[in-house]
Image (tube, rainbow over all chains, first blue to last red; front, side):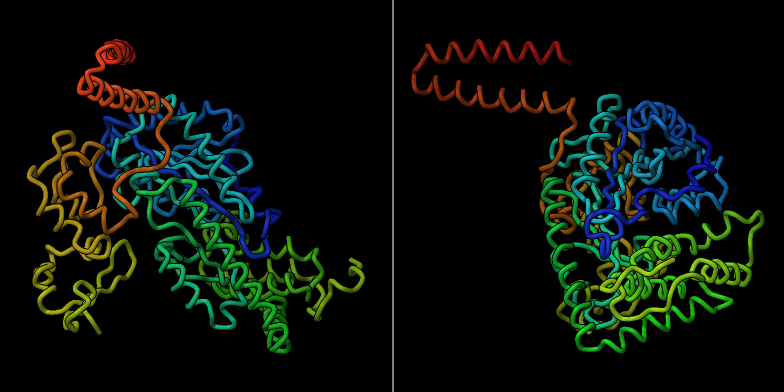
Length: 365
Length: 165
């Protein structure tokens, strides 16, 4: 399958049809695995990395889950193509920096992606829409078992699956949920929530993982520890905390609606006004304003049909997605102008926000 | 502001480092800063300090071998990168490892998935140990008939294991 067909269609997790998808954008579970007898990628020589790749890639491609897959060597991807994959969370930023000796295999639905020779020989992940950590784990666990039959994974009787970084040893599993928490941010409760989450041994990160800023009121909640607990227990613990956060976000939304309905409508209305009429917009500003529109849809200020175009804008206004349709690399100011015009075009038919749209008859197109 | 390491004395050394393009800050008191080698900036890895509060120090204290026999990875390499060189490093640097892992994880023993191909071997291993225990008990209790039966089962299981490998 050619790479442009993957790049031109969004993954199914973006459709936002999973459970709790008004607050949980996506659920991801990744497993780190290494082969016995080869140094980890960071310490391996080029020929060793190539040997590992030659061993793993055919095994991955022969998986039934990868029947219609796209499999590509890192050196055959342009910097822009890699960045598009990063923005879709199909590869990591670290993997995007790799060249010869690394590869990525993704299924057609873009629910599975397997990075070869990232920090570990194998980093495999499943991604699903909404809160579906258990399903995502089931999917990747099956892939792992199938691969484990063909490949000799490094496994230690005491420490479990061995990984390059000792912070991943044991299950090698990182499970995470991307959450949209605008009401907790607006009501200034989000820091309390983050502190509480940290206290129970879970991590909160920004949009693109470790060390990234929280933009668009999007937060990633994930497990911090990988050794000493079963996979299912880690996921159950994470799930519980996520359900609590959903509860808090819902409460915050309700209390804002009751106590500060004008402020709320004003925030959504201003975001709508700027997005509709701006001619230059940076990606951070776009995400932050789109977050208010998404909240507006959830609260019924806009008809429900507006949800998909707004969700799509979240990803399509990202720098690489914006540029993939243009042939040359754009300067920052050119990108901002293009982004603003894309948003204006998409929002052209969208009605202005009014309280409680969804209780009346549906808006005619 | 208290020291990030001992959490007791007040901090007087404020350190900022860019690791992998990400800013990290650590506040230390006089004593801890000397202990962690902050006076020598080249020998100090903030990442280690944040990762496992002196992870590489633990490694140095505990380990007797300085290089992994399988991949040639050294403690200095670990100190620099915070990563191991290969799977065998976990045994080569075993002594210091436990202290480091203690600070990072919920336990020191893997409780999760076992690769299906190893699961059989693991179950056999457990069965072997149980039979050996039962055998010793049977002999001690002078139940020689039971002991003989257990001995035969043990032999059978051991032979099975040999062919499997």
